[in-house]
Image (tube, rainbow, N blue to C red; front, side):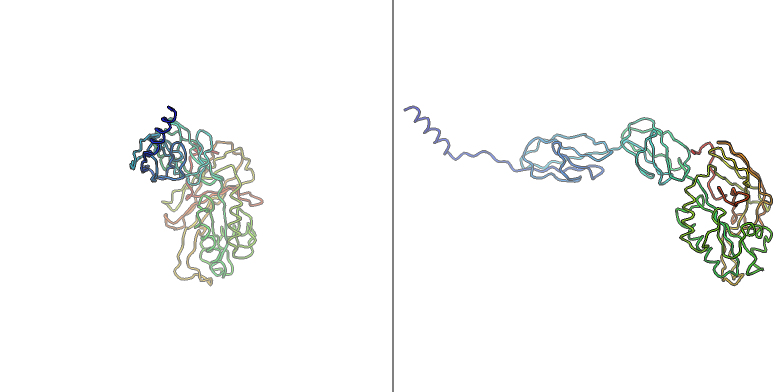
Length: 402
């Protein structure tokens, strides 16, 4: 019967011992420059990063690519024909398009007015080629210039020059200490002030200190005797009754030797926006020192009832042997002279700087060891609104963003 013969043929063929061919798997070595890019196989994330070897792949056609945030991959992807027991390698080059900004550390970066969520120093990648406007923001600081135009080049990270942006504290806090060479605890006041000034958060544009001398317990205090009238005028104005004593912006601190409390008081004062900057320049080449003080207001201010206190201090004095009973031989920011008649202030108009030219005495202090300081102080309640000094960077008014 014909159908019986057909079945016999089929059974015979099935039992011939023939098997489907098998192929050994292959590998693909994936690298990238720079390394650390995610590896994708046929569009699926492998969970691995370059350099990585894909192993155990059956001979077939595969699409492989890598990805790193803010980088462009060259080539975008690669299709390979993997042979049996074969080993292929793929190398990708990753490039970025954007800007690197390092100046004014800790400032937030805005591109075309949009906050990038990043702070300096860093690179901002993923930008489109062309011209963009960069601006920086930093709490309690002025940043200048207010904006900067930069050109973004395709597949390059362009460095914005380091000196493009500069930051200056919006507020400079003034500390005034009162001491005497025979005051036992007075060296501790100096130590606290120096320890604070050494911390990065308390730079010279953030806080300035000045030490006056009182006439007790040692009437022969050499720093007091160097300018008895003006030292006495200062401690009399504050009704200083003991030493050491310490004032922040014209207000007495409860414990002059409480270093942490002093620093907290400064931090609190830095949050205020006085609306004006005090810039100070001076020529210390001659005994009679010309000092220029520029007040730059960022809003209209009525400073009626305020005066501009301008003084010079000796940065560092080493007496070798203690001049008093405290044992102290190193003294800092020692008051030397002030303007005899502090200029009276009045209305300041937004964007219109006001200049004052005054003269103080160098009192024999070396030209490289002296600093001029100026601050705006209320005539009645003694509160100090703002301060500045010759060690504070001067910002040209037209380049400051309020």
